[in-house]
Image 1: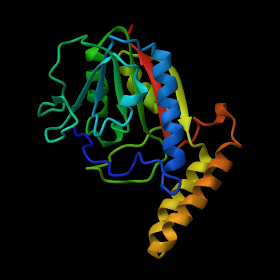
Image 2 (image 1 turned 135 degrees about the horizontal axis):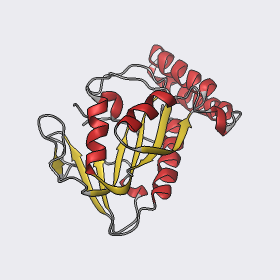
Image 3 (image 1 turned 135 degrees about the vertical axis):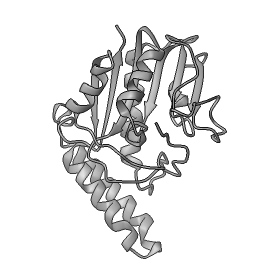
Image 4 (image 1 turned 180 degrees about the vertical axis):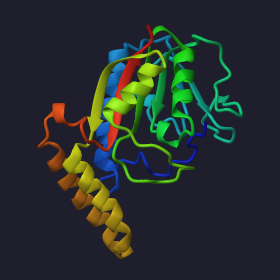
Length: 228
């Protein structure tokens, strides 16, 4: 399994950031799913493929936070082994957090099984990954998911999906991809105002969709699953 160690500005949130609205909505989704997991001070939380720990601040003060990633990431407190596994005992964590990692993993089923192994009984996996997002290497990019397909991978690992959210419905996702496919064709001075304007249009379009329709075709999928 391979993991992301350098995401550049993928989680940046300034007004003219290329992914500002998507990042804001993904953060809301992750926060809500973590709230549903009932994370309390003292809980052990594993950030599996932590990169720069972008959602560390969404966890309550007092959790035992463990960031795991490939060797070379200074933000990680645990280094993954050569197979991408976490050198921790079975049932070591109350929550496993995995954000925008699964699409970069060579063996997604093995990765989710590892998440399941590490969870205590009734513990929660909070995971997000790509739906219809475009291809990008970081360091490699293997997979895209539908809600049904992602749910099956998670269920096959012995976990029960209890909540799932779509981030950026189809129209907004299409506009995001259009922006990202055209912004680099513009002169550099025009890129920031173009992104700022497109992000407003993307936000306006996304709000026209009902929550129930988002999962059918969305830029990103986020879920919470529990271990029986």
